[in-house]
Figure: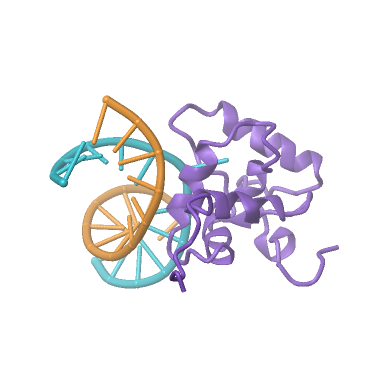
Length: 116
DNA sequence: ATGCTGACTATGT
DNA sequence: TACATAGCCAGCA
């Protein structure tokens, strides 16, 4: 009853933030993966746009989300945030190859029990 | 209400 | 490997 409509607070963006928060340090997830885990298949774009609206310090580790190519997506805002993102990931132990790419096979987040 | 924009991804050339 | 194209959704003027 009363139907199964979802609460207004449970907007797509909120669901996305919730998933991103689960990504442990030293791991990265792709926009598409986050979308899928959040129950929004094919909406990788929304993940990026949602993260664009999140503030640094809101508790959402936005820097752990990269694109499917294992690279950091450029923002309209400028390269500043992109550089910061890479710096943070390296601090967490995520390695980048000479092309600036992360090995998703190795650092990709796999929502299975607990990542170690 | 309508239209534009934006941290994506998969596929084809 | 690089570029172009199509699909998809929410927020904002």
